[in-house]
Length: 86
Image 1: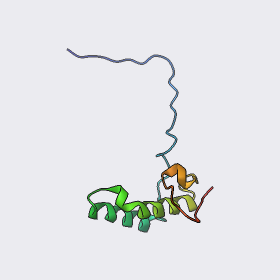
Image 2: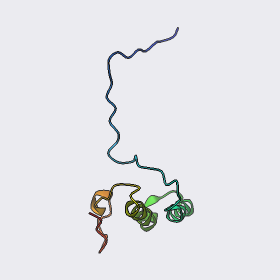
Image 3: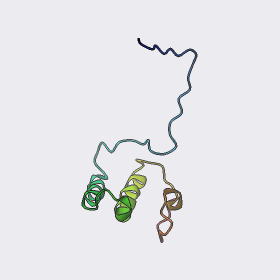
Image 4: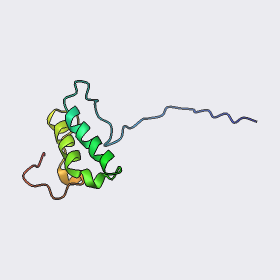
């Protein structure tokens, strides 16, 4: 027995607030991404041990307009000094 699902009417698709951003086709932030990925691998995927690497990667993306500039506090970096982006 099979179940068939049909959708009627129009559906509005809303993109996510964060998490969807242009790919880095030119590799502008590749070095930062590689450092972050290596840190994750070395630390058993514990991202809390790689906060500086992830911050550097996000900073690179924001500076090159590969993601919207956000306040560090909104991104979970409450103790960032002298590097506000908004």
